Amino acid sequence: MPPAEALGGDEPEAGPGRWSGAPLLAVCAGYFMVILDVTVINVAVPVVGRELPASLTGIQWITDGYTLVFAGLLLTGGALGDRLGNRRIFCTGVTVFTVSSIACALAQNAPFLVVARLVEGAGAALIVPGSLALLQQAYPAPAERSRAFGLWGAMAGIAASAGPLLGGLLVSTVGWRWVFLINVPVGIVCLMLTLRHVAASPRQRDRAMDWPAQCAVVAAVALLTAALNEAGRRGWSDPAVLAAAGLTVPAVVAFAVRERLARSPALPPSLLRSRSLSGGAVIGMLFNFGFYGMVFTASLDFQHQRGFSALGTGVALLPAVAMTMFASVLSGRLTRRTGDRPLVVTGMLLAALGLAGWGAAGPEPAYPLLIAPMMAAGFGTSFALTGATSTVMGAAPAGYAGTASALFNTTRQIGSATGVALGGTLLATAVDYDAGTRTSMAVGALAYLTAAVLAWFCVPPKHTPA
Image 1 (tube, rainbow, N blue to C red):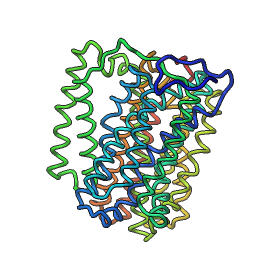
Image 2: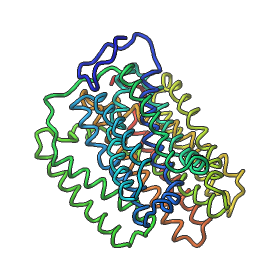
Image 3: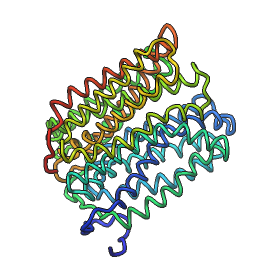
Image 4: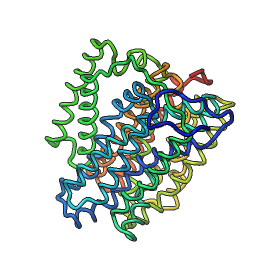
């Protein structure tokens, strides 16, 4: 292959004639960094608060600032990728993320760290939509694309669940700054692999950016995410939560009005009218709700109810993590024979069975009894994610891969935030901690069951051309 052109060249190159794992490795490296930084910081934040020092509000913004900017800018990142070239925007995001990670590691006070985390979140929002679009570009054959999407999805489960374990190891050995410095070599390798092995993406030069709509959707997603994040800590009746939730409504209305009037809407009506695309996005929201709600409540149960350390909690969650990679590989192979619908339905039913098993295990069940439910939830979520991702991306019209990816990942982020917020509320309001955990698992099981029913009607039984 000839040397890679300058960052973000805008004419596509001919890809290699045989399947290569290099584009997959490049894209997954970037995605792994993004999702890892959502959870790895949780273990480090108390230490950061003592060393810098930081107020409680500052500590919250170190964690939530990244999530809010990430979720809020996803659709903007997707639109920029479609217009300017997905590889260009992906590489820009990796660069911003890597440089801001260095800034986080070098922070000498809390305000500087918060600002660096906000910038890091912006870089993440540029990486994620382009990651799926680049995989679709690199692997056009349905079977290869499903395999790539499966491994991409497995990265999310592995990174999110391994975050506390890795964070605990780094903080207890080399210090909290390495929670951010670990991103630097990964980011450099990701950038090099992308420029060398991922073809440059076509650009939609004639598509204008609808900035009023983009601003409205950023405000709506950021406000909703903020309300959900704070609801888990403050309760649903807190004035700040109610204000953020209330302001979400006019932001959504402003976005909807602007979309009806815009010549080049940020989310074309054809996207939302697609049963496969919009249904797949809702399925993504539901299984993220179930999985991340499970991880959150299980983490608190292990630490506060059972007395596990942060490192011990990470180890205790490994059964869920270990199944994600196996499930993604298996589903990528099976989808060539079965299509996506059976895999998504089966995965959601299995995950629902796992969480229902936890909820039915009785008061304060011994840890060995929870291994099988965690394995079922991890396996089922990852098993279904491959088909859901293929469904959404396969339904995207030409030139809208980045936007479709952004929509899918935005709904997933909202699902994660909702699962965590509701889990926190149930733990805080239950008669006892164990009852709150079991109720949270039952709600997660219901979300998985709803996703299974929705998948039966929205996920095509066989592959359709992208």
